[in-house]
Amino acid sequence: MTDEKFMKIRLNSIHPSAPVPFDIFVHIGEKYIHYLRTGDRLAAEKIENFERRAPDAFYIYSSERDNYKRYVKERMNSDQLPTKEKALILRESSMSLVEEMFESPDVGRALSESKAVITDFVSFMDKDPDAMAHLIGLSSHDFYTYNHSLDVGIYSLGLGKVIGYSGAELHELGQGALFHDVGKRHVSVDIICKAGPLDDVEWAQMQKHPQFGLMILNNYPVSDAIKACCFEHHESYVGNGYPQQLVGDEIHPMARIVAITDTYDALTTKRSYNSPMMPSDALTFMKEKLASRFDPELIRSMYEILFKMKEAKIAV
Ligand SMILES: [Fe+2]
Ligand SMILES: [Fe+2]
Image (cartoon, rainbow, N blue to C red; front, side, top):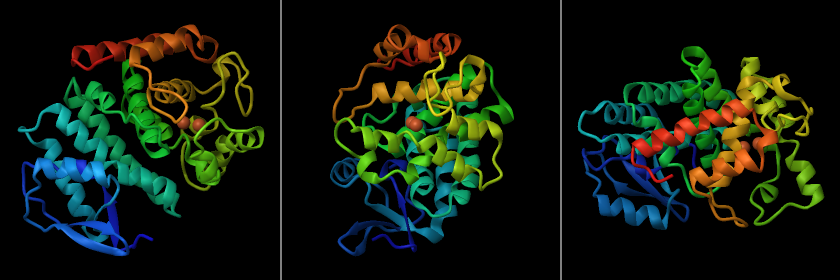
């Protein structure tokens, strides 16, 4: 059981370059134990050791939330840190939002917090030409709903930028992509975490997540585009997707983007029954074997992202 007094963070969002301005705890048994005290510095070896053993078990006081955000912002604005490290800090610090999106009873709070997170991603991408490639290069190799949501958000911002989205439209796309699977809140964890293919009953339940997502989002003042990312991301370009069997342009353009980034992420991450594909293999597979599902022009634009990754010397 976690305590409201504490907020989970990823240790990778802390950079060893400066003393930490808040206490950090580990959760062991029922207790929160000091791991670092305010003013201590985090040794790089300590991060690696602990991350390997207990990746999710770091906390700060919830009351330090703003302090933590300020800390992340300062790191992101520092001239000292290379793009790759900034990408890691931004990605890891955003995980608490994604956890909130799936675990907190209040989706509204996650929705409003996500605006600032998307703004941080967009301004990082705007400021640094290699940012997108590094953010994508850091994508998790494990398929886990939280990682998946964040990565689909990042890829969608990348693809959106490539095809010329900016400003409010790009933000909307980022938010829609981040929340595309929010309906999985209503699908049993046993189905979501099942190691292996789903049986018919489980599959039927899983396929309801776009409807569940729409039901959730209908309770909040979000745009039709954001709702479409959630409700239409499993539609297929030729019309045999779900839940509405929409065809081609009937599918909202942002949902067409999410359909691609969603599949791309599923192919490039490891699940219990498949091994991850390299980015270029995944795209070739989508272009050749799954072509009918996607907007062909958007698939072509995905290659631009691969190109940027190659330029930033990330293995594709
Ligand atoms: Fe989905
Ligand atoms: Fe998804």
